[in-house]
Image 1 (tube, rainbow, N blue to C red):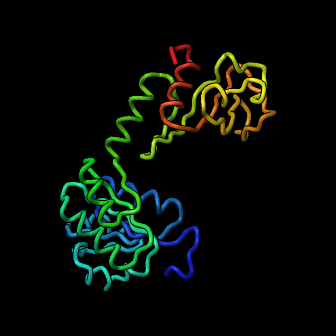
Image 2: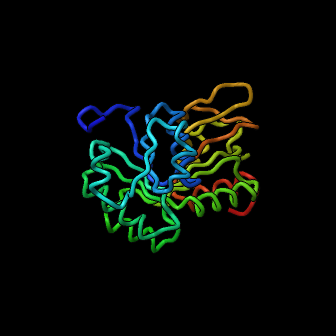
Length: 228
């Protein structure tokens, strides 16, 4: 469980068993990770007691309490506390002081996120904002899936533009024109294929593209015949 024996399925601490925290914990469990789930609310601890590897009631702002639980032996921790900003910040600070290598934390506002970064959070997640942006992109109909990262980078799944039909990626030069990278191609009835310059695009193909958020959005709009 310590950092000296890291593995792909190493255990993870999840603090805060609200909707975000439990969703993360459930996903980690499905991916084969053991989860130490911590919350101060005894009702939530009882509710999830049978779902995760270890579910413990504790004050996550108390560094000594976390140390007694062995949190300092974990490599990764996720702080899902959102509504109590002070508890969120103090929890991140306690994890950093305990030497947890990688701390992910939920933020409800940009200011909250800035504070989390300043006290040592390695990754700040804005779940409501990210989901709102993703839904907005899907509603416009230019993408069938969309993931935006907080550093201005995005990945999208969209249909291939007419200009690419019956040409290889090297010939259509989509990267040079739009500033995006075609990562892969999905053709109806065939397996996903990683894209190379010699990959030929046909009508009906879907492309997985990545790049700066604004350029990905421009490309997807152009692929659907809208002004890029």
